[in-house]
Amino acid sequence: MNAKKIQIIPSIQIYKGKIIRTEQGDFDTLKQYDKDPVSLAKSFEDSGIKVVHIVDLDGTKKGIPENLHIVELISQYTSLEIDFTGGVNLDGDVNHVVEAGAHYITAGSVAVENKDLFSSWIISYGREKITLSADADQNEKIVYRGWQKQADLDLFEHIEYFYNQGLKYAKVTDISREGVLQGPNFELYQKLRDKFPNLSILASGGVRNVDDIRRLNDMGMFAVIFGKALYEEKIKLSDLKEFMA
Image (cartoon, rainbow, N blue to C red; front, top):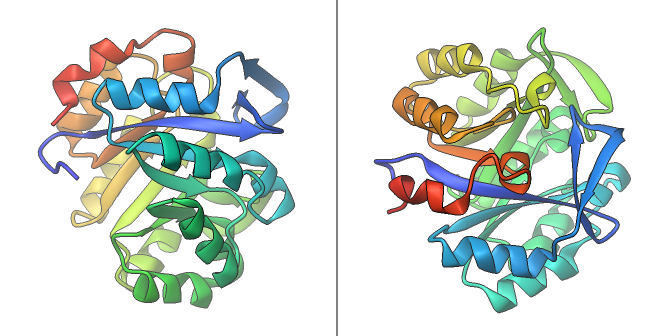
């Protein structure tokens, strides 16, 4: 992974076999895109992208991965590294996702409901493979289970617990920014950068243009994860060449 420039990680959200986006995680705002996941992944690869973020929304709702066949296909037809999230709550889930072809696991709910188990993954699978998904509301309180549940957990305290356990990567989303193309929460990311200077932060939510990505890059974010700006053609893949290794 290139440490000098922010890593560009497009997101593919899968729900009932289709690529979709929601606004602020609300399924009533669901918008379906007429794109094939494998063809889309190939277009990312052709543009020089190295990693794709696969979100299994069915898995998130059911609590067990449901779309591993799509991971298998993308793994088979591209050389992209796959970061998978959605319904990974047990050791067996991690094994199934890795067997399907994923290189990285991003998990959030298990870190809320079973801290010891998530901590054990950092050790057993390695800190390069496991990313904490720390999603928060406007009050910086953790939300989980596909953003349908709220925990009485402060975002910074939640991250710090796992940071002290050796966590290297955290994907942080201000859910009020997700899918609405109003810009990332730069203030939040700066606070995280100041508090956890050695944490590799993956910024997610709100990206609307290349200038947003440049600003996140200048702030020292490790990666940016986004989807809607690509699908709505606010950002073209050709616009991203300056960030490619």
